[in-house]
Amino acid sequence: MLRDTFENWQSEFLQLLWQVVGLTLLLYVGSPQSKESEDRAEAMIEAILRKVDPQGADRTMAKIEKKYPSE
Image 1 (cartoon, rainbow, N blue to C red):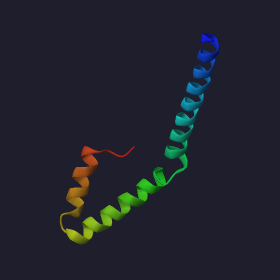
Image 2: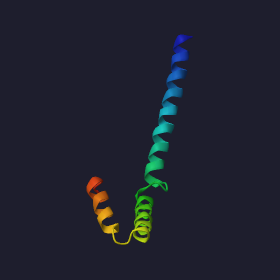
Image 3: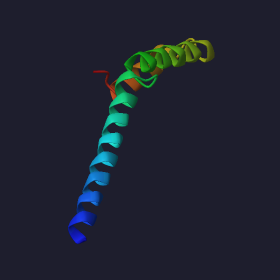
């Protein structure tokens, strides 16, 4: 009985692990959170910054780029 219980638990655990790994890959590779979406969001934020502070936008963008360098 213990062997059957362990085999069932192992099967369920491996299935759950596969689902988590698979969904994680799908989320970060092919979803709106992928690189294209990040680029779009960055462009939108930069456009807003330029509207709010036209003179200081370049300086602020340089500070942000220095603190968080792009890859």
